[in-house]
Image (cartoon, rainbow over all chains, first blue to last red; front, top):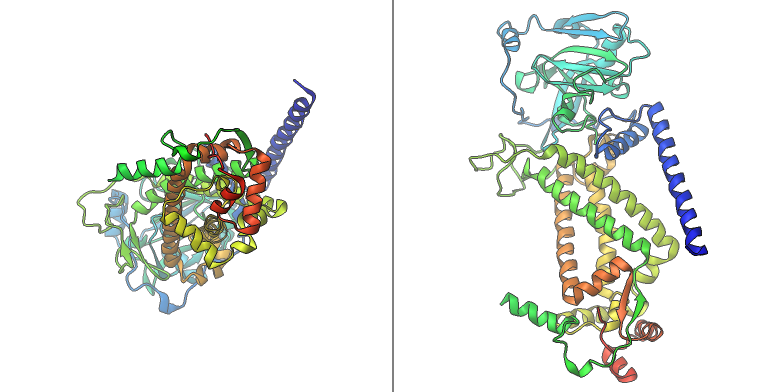
Length: 252
Length: 296
């Protein structure tokens, strides 16, 4: 080994060590500030982490685009649904009069709301677009209670970092971080385009997360849990989506 | 027909054994520097990412092979156009009686990971290119070449299938330069911008991008069309490499050097003479005698 190549070797070695140390430091900082998504393991982890971290730094408070009434889609598209289970069918037969939304986990006052309880809370309305990962979209008016309103009523504890939400349908659950949970447009939706929320669009209760793709807006919500860790939910990837091969963070 | 065409092209353009004997002068083989290491590394990272983006993008399109114009569009609205293929989702009215397997999960993960890799690589390349003068010296056409006459000269040579001058292995002609500049500074930025305009979170922070593109579905349609242009570029790019001498051009982009039959200094003189005076290869040949063909 001659002098020049040894020098090159040492320089390259130091450069590589500095690079590894830099990445490790960045990962540590990202973890401390909650910039690592729960599905950051595996070969696609770096891309997911970059997307989530960049968006949390740049778009934490931004509002999803709202549209004029004239842009509400004449023919909104209700996506395909799995066959309803018996629990849903019983509720449907009773006209959803007994539908409850239970809130527990890291809250001071675990509470159960009926849809009419939710309707007695301040009304929030938005005309936003539903964007499916497949590529299609439509605009509708969504009416409901902002999630932050309900979380404040239940006394969310400061150590909570995620809200996990469950559909009455099996294996359909998801979660959002606090930036989205307290985002003013994140909506417990019970009405659409001036009528009750139709079953095809998630009625009687759907959580709308308009800054993320449609699959984060889970239909037929019955249960919310506040937690500081997603490790013990399902496979620990944050939602049913990564278990089916889809990203947890769907803001893209 | 196709076979004879390729044979013809090989015999005329490449350094294959059937090379015409009249210019097979004795060789003084030597390596001439061609592509900087930075260009080679970023080129191949970009090539790999483009391939990943193309495959995963095609898989995503299969889930909804319908395109629209404006803000919204779905299975219940009219389309701008449809791709006549079966879809990977049940409800898409394709006219086919079956549904393809859904590949969107890994395709989306791969699409965005490759997008990050190519965007970061492209940013490094842009900074490096400005810093080192790469764009100015290697990609922006020389003043004498910025004429329709010069451009037409290159096109006419290609139409006549005339053999590329050896010095063309050392520098790009004006049409190549224009093509690469359009890809780097027009198509890549547009495909990134139209892609970002499909992100609901990006659109919440930077709504003017998607709005100025005419809405979300317009952005998706444009993203598709720009991809088509990039694929057309890729096809021509690869075809020209094959016709001009696959081994020589690949060697230049992998090892960074081209083997020239003429000494480095002499080839540099000819290359600079060509750039400066825009002399034709024929004129240079008269000046310097027969110029030996590049060897691979």
